[in-house]
Image (cartoon, rainbow, N blue to C red; front, side, top):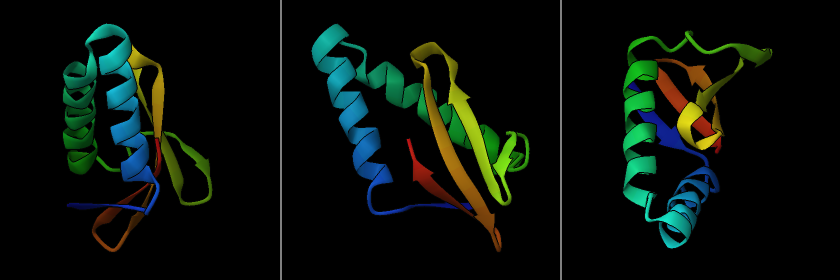
Length: 81
């Protein structure tokens, strides 16, 4: 399953990684956790709860971030982080 980002979501991901890097040198670990989460959701796209019709929300537990996404025609669309 392919993944795409809306125009702000990718910026949010990068901004969160930069912030965590500058505050606690955890930017790479944050991105690693995001990548592991994305790999799981690509395999099991409906594994995260649906918070509104067609909108799912997953969590990056270690960093207390959530990722909201939709599933459309074999593609995950990341809405925001």
